Amino acid sequence: MDSLDIKIGQMIMIGYPGTEVDPKVLEEVTKGKVGSIILFEKNVPKTNSFVALKKILWTYQQAAPTPLFIAIDQEGGRVNRLKDKYGFPRSITAKEMGSAGTLDSVKFYGEATATTLLGLGFNVNFAPVVDLASNPTNPVIVKSGRSFSANEDTVIQMARTFIQTHRKLGVITVLKHFPGHGSSEADTHFGVADVTNTWDDRELEPYRALIESGDVDAVMSAHIVNKKLDPEGNPGTLSANILNGILRQKLNYHGVVFSDDMQMQAITKHYGVEEAIRLAILAGIDIMTFSNNIMGSEDRTVDRVSQIIKGYVKSGVITRERIDESYQRIMQLKRKLTAESKEEYYAKELLNEQRKVNQLTQQVKALEEEKARLAAEASTKKKKKKNRK
Image (cartoon, rainbow, N blue to C red; front, top):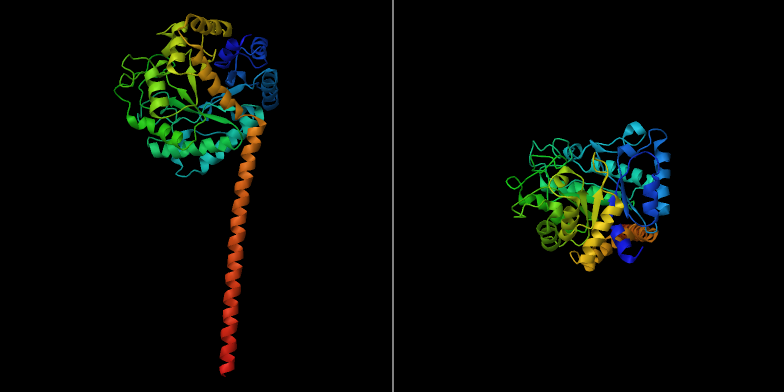
C-alpha cells in the first residue's frame, strides 16, 4: 500500500456481522485498509460476554499497524449495546440523568460506562448526545430519552461531566448530532429529516460552549436537512456550509468529525454511494462510518469505498491536501490513546493533587501558627493580670 492508501484507510470505519473475529475484517485491519471499527449489540457474544468480547477487540487491536479506533454507541438507556443481561453494568437514559437535578447520576453512570469500555478495549464512545429536547414529539432523540434536557445550559453541564468521566480513563467521546437533531419530526434512519422550520440557533450552544472550554474530543454529523444553514438542502453530513462553514469556521473547531452511518436511508435513498462519499469529504468529514448494520448495504465494501476515494484524488476532484487534513486530525486524536498520553494525564493529575496537599499543609501550618500566637497572647495577658495583683 502507498501512503495515499494508508491515509484513506484511516478515513474509513466499518461494522461487521457475527460474534467472533471476522477473518475479512481482520485482514483489512492488518493491511491498514481500515482505521476504525464499530460494534453493535449483534457483535456481543451471548455467553461469557466480557472475556469473549475483550478477546475479539484485543485481536483486532493487536493486528493493526496503526492503533484502531474501536467504537460503540453506549449512551445508556435505549441506545445501549452492552446490556445488563450480558453481565454489563445497568445504564439509564440521558433524560433520567438530566431529570435527577444533580450531576451525581452523570458522574456515576458516566464512570461506570467508561470503566466498562476501557476494560473491554473500546476507546471511542459515540456519546454524549447534546441535542436539545426541543421537540417533545421528536421520534429519534426525545421520545427515546436520549437528550439530557430541552435547556441548553443543562445539556452543556451534563455533557461536560460525562466527557470528563471518560477522559480520566482515556476513552474518547463524540458529541452528536451536529448541528442539532432534537427539533426534527422524522428519523434519518428511514429517510430525510427536514428541520428547516423547526431548528433553532440554541441547538448550537452545547457545541459552542464545549469547544470553547476544550471539552470536545470529536463530533458526529447529523443527516438532517436545514435549508436555513444549507440553501441547497444537502444533509449536514454532506454540507460544506454546515461542517466547514459553521462547525470549523464559525465555532472554531479543528478536530475530527465522524459521519453518522453513511448507510442510513437519509443518505442512501437520495445519493449514490459515490456521490455521498464525494460530498462528505468535501464537506469536511474525516471518518466515514459504514456500519454494515442495515439490510441491503453489503455492497459498501472497504475496497470499493477506498477505490472511489482514490479515484476522486487521481482525477483532482478531491485534493491530496484534503486527504492529508483528515489524516493529520485523525492521527492527532489517536495520539491521545497512547500510553504516554495516559501517563501524562495521570502525572498532571498527581501534580494537581500534590498542589492541593501543599495548599492544605500551608493552611494547617498557618492555623497552627495563629493558634500558637493566640495562646502566647493569652499567656502574656494572664501573666500581666497576675502581676497586677
